[in-house]
Structures are given as structure tokens and as C-alpha cells.
Image (tube, rainbow, N blue to C red; front, side):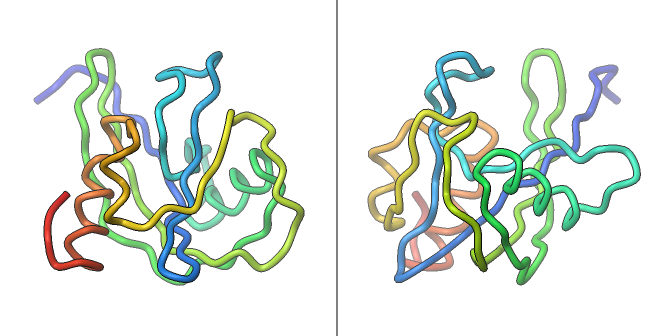
Length: 137
């Protein structure tokens, strides 16, 4: 049993025309310039769905509908354990504006290898590649 705190985080897996939305963390964020599926911490009293809807509105000014919640992944960082729950979503509105991130891209799974993802997101990258292409990243 670990004495490290566990931080519950959600991320959005958004697919359009066979490409996935990924965002690059800004230089001032933890894990600077790493790529990720955007999201954030689940606040006390929030469901995962409420958290991802709020986070994407705050960080990207987009409105989403959640299609499906997937099982979470655990990743051990040196000072905490990340409990990351991916939620498949679609963009239903808003005006995409980068409020915290440095960049964003729509990327096909076969091109994920060209991006330096945060360690916590690697399991999601592998799962998408396995599901969409029938092979691991």
C-alpha cells in the first residue's frame, strides 16, 4: 500500500474524421510541453462527467457531450498516483480557444508516435491504437 496521495483526473478522448484531439501543455504547466488528452482534476462532489465538461469549458471554451466513460488507469509519479479516467466525448459547441495550453492538433493514431505524451496518457494512447488499428503503440 502506497502512502502517496491519489489524484483523480479525467481526460476527454474526442475523435472526428478518424483523428483525435490532443493538446500541448504550456511551458508554465507541470510536465511542460508534453502532449495530452485535455482534462483536469475532479473536484470534491463532482462526477467524472461533470468534471470533464467543466474542465474543457474552462481550458478550451468548448462544450462537449460525453458518450462513454472508460475504466481508469493508474500511473505512479514520484510524488503522487494519478487515477486517470478517459471519457469519450464530442464537441457540441463553443469557440475553441487555448486558455492554458500552448497548442492543439487533430492526430491520427498512427501519428501518435510523433508526439511526446505525458506518462499518464501513454496507456490511453496504447488503448486507442489497439482499438482503432489493431496494434499497440
